Image (cartoon, rainbow, N blue to C red; front, side):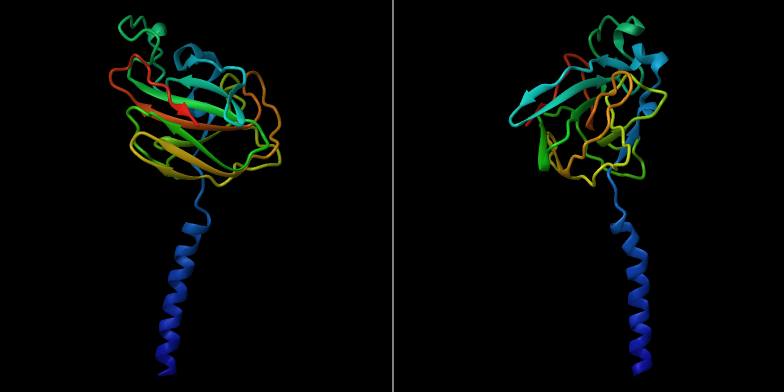
Amino acid sequence: MKLEKRAALSIVMIFVLILYPISAFAATPIRHGSDIGVDSGADSWNLFGPTKLLSVANFSYAQQVLCPNHDVAASEGDVTNAGGCSSGAYVFLFQIPTGLTNAAISFKNLVGFTFNDDPNNPDQATVGAVQCDATNTKLLCTTLGPYQIPSITFTHTSTSVTFHIPSIPAYPAGSGTQGQGLTLFVQTQQSPAVPVAFPKII
C-alpha cells in the first residue's frame, strides 16, 4: 500500500514539474524593432509618428502607427488607400513613461481585432510590448538597460483590450526616436484599410 502511494505521489510530482515551467515562465509577447523593419526602409512601414507626449486621464503617452507588411500606401503609389496601409494591417504603438503602478490601460473601439497573446510566437501576437534593438531607431520601443519588461496580463473583448501592468520601471532613453518608457503594441486587421480606425486609450 505504501509503495502504491509513493508511486502515485511520484507521478503527481512529475506532472507538477512538467507543468510548472509553463505557468511560471509565461511571459509578455515581445517584438523587437527589427521585427517591424529597419531604419533604411522606414518609408514603407512608418505610417504616422512618433508623436510627442499626449495626455489622457492621469498619465501621458506617445503614439506611433506602423504598417507591419511594409505597405504604406503613399510609398507604393496606392491612391485608393492613401493615408493608410494597403493591406489594412496596422500596429499601434503606445509608449508609457515611468511612474505607473498597478495600471490598467485599456484600448477601446478596436476594429478588426483578434486577441492573441502567445509569447512563443510574438510575430503572430496582436498585443504585447516592443523592445529596442540597434537596427531600428525610428520606432517607439523599450530600452531595457538593467530592467526587464514586466509580466503583463490581459482582459479583452472583440473590440477592446486592457493591459494590466504591475509597474513601469525607469527605463533609459533610447536612440533616435525610440523614446523612453514601456512601449505597448496592439495590432488590427481592418477592412477597408481606410479610413483608419484608431484605438481609444483609457
